[in-house]
Length: 350
Image: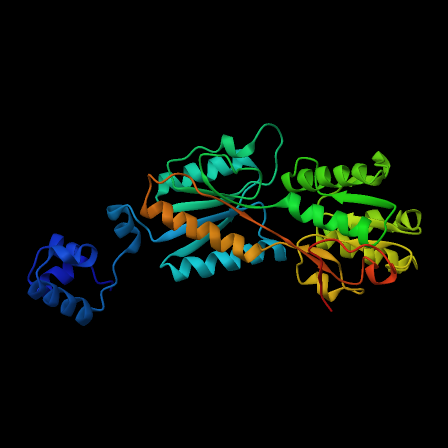
């Protein structure tokens, strides 16, 4: 039979409200009474109803993290960093996924109504029209991840997409001597894809290289989709100093696998580069040149900002920008381009 708070009160010879104060606001109860209540709790094996406690205190000691997906290493690394920081700061983490700003708004309203979490970190990666973060309204403390939110009213953690894409593109042109670069991104509404494609086009034009609509493709970031797409086209992409810039590592590795099946050598016949530096970048052959995104740090920083917001709700918004790092491996063919000019910030890894 489950022990109730009333059982504890009777054993300790106090009121139910006194037991509640000992559990929730110990400093309001004198030491002798606290000792009697604690002894009764221990003798009876009473376990407080934490949900009811949270409703009374309006504090659950739980934080939410909502991502566009929970599949794949990118999101798992964000979760890993967020969870470690939450535990370090005395919180538990609730994970969910959303399908755009409207779904995010519905989720926030539901969480607010149920009082499940004290605050929320959320990533909205699709921009079907306007600025998606402006559509999110909530009384919950909120931190936004990714996207161009530096000037928003909410705390935010973003990746400097432009810096990462510029480092990669300049490396391909200056060090590797590429003359044709194809861009393979996610959906046209994806904010990361938009930022990386914009830099791709800017750097190509600055180098007087043609930007052809036939060299720009929008898929869905998934290995299977990219592999099926590349398998029928990879021979046509091959050529001297030709390269595929895939906007994530999964698609880049799919292109390499499709090229291997078609007997197109990487990087001799076609260079391939990616973005994110997930584990697959080091496991594929040849190892993938890519841009390292501090995924775990992004999750941890979001939780840290959220806890600071909970401690001081009236502080001005904090906006953190994390800088990615170019990781040069074999798939770009840099070692084969003797005499090519190195790009600033190259990080070579074995």
